[in-house]
Image 1 (tube, rainbow, N blue to C red):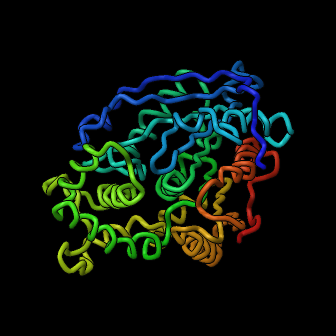
Image 2: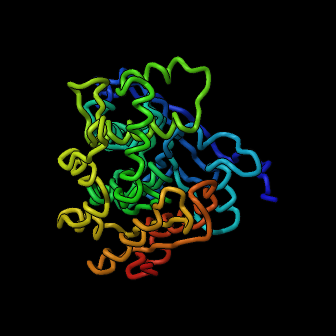
Image 3: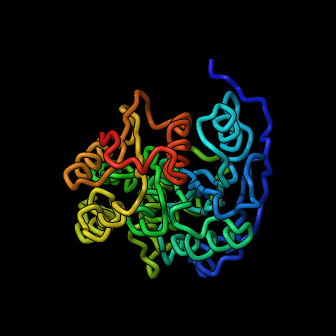
Length: 354
């Protein structure tokens, strides 16, 4: 039986509010004001803020940063996990930031989208400056790390690809990659689901919001609409969302689908600028279960193989499990990120590249 952590967080768990300009004009009508949880371990010495590492945690689809700091049955919150890892001598104290990035489409891919909001701008131009100015920490990219799981893992990896010069290290747990395996096979299922609601996203969303409960099939369809809103938004269309298929025949619209693929890490890594961004990191870590229900392990294997060919230092680990309930993998990534930022064990050049 998994062990439950009964110990309350030893440090300070605070919450700040950010009124975002980057999110203000999102077409979903979601609030631009966002709550951000901040955890300060009791061992953290804020009298020397320049020495304090800063972690940004991005939550998975259907979750929020606020959910990662709350009580867990037969488990532990991330603040509790950080406390335990510190007490075990596996890492030192670090300020960790947990933004609420939930949307009415069920989650976030942490991209700039006119429909969902400019989430990349929110993270880099609003959240980081606010936290770093309020506590005087960070400011130096070498003292920052970004990590996440599933959609949050994708968001963290995307930050490394696009903005590697703004981060010291990146960790991606079971992140979205290999879109041909992850999303393409789900397009007929999504198209069929939309047909049951009159064929359009607007009708489905209206029905979803009126439902007294949230079912698995509805969440799966909502997720596909969230992906479409992230990777190929259609501000002038119905609900601003379109799938990259013909709604009647489910024939793939190659142009629309290409816009999804342009956001796939397996495609992004082929751009020289993105490669250079990853090379600038002190540590790049990603992992995936070998029985992932969304087939993400195939994309992760392909990415690790390609990074090796490009001689981009990274560490990829595959473990015996699925996509679900794998937060225990943070026991690997959190100490690794900490050590990369404070230089305890070098910069992980050439470490275990798959």
